[in-house]
Image 1 (cartoon, rainbow, N blue to C red):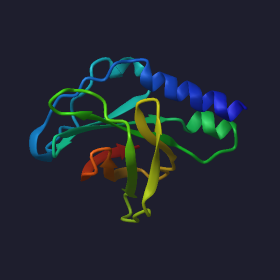
Image 2 (cartoon, rainbow, N blue to C red):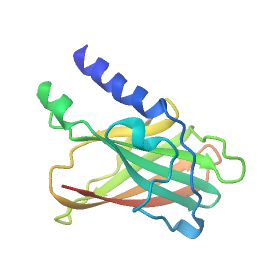
Image 3 (cartoon, one colour):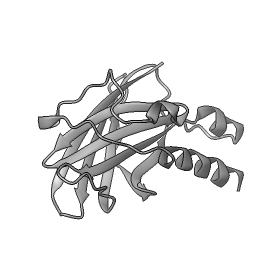
Length: 157
């Protein structure tokens, strides 16, 4: 029950602030600037940027949850999440299949991990236990049936 309450608190923190995408064409994205209004106030939220692929804007974030998880004896370090919006209308796209492959700083690649749909985003708890740059390759097949891949990176200290 404790685990559920902490995870629920993390998710509610993600959905408490509106996310407005800064659109980038042809998959370009900027990791140096916040891409979403209000995300700095979300407490520990790490913005990975926004990427546009075939008319869909993917916006990725992580939340460092290692302290809360360690208290429960868990090795999870981050909650990884991605939200999708229609580029033309801005409407959220929250139905479909989404998975992520994570490349760690030492070059190890995880198998595809399913991201579960939850409160307007797709997410999963992950273990990022090395310092350095991680790459997140997100494969999606949203409700329109179109396959898309979104790439993000983040440095973990």
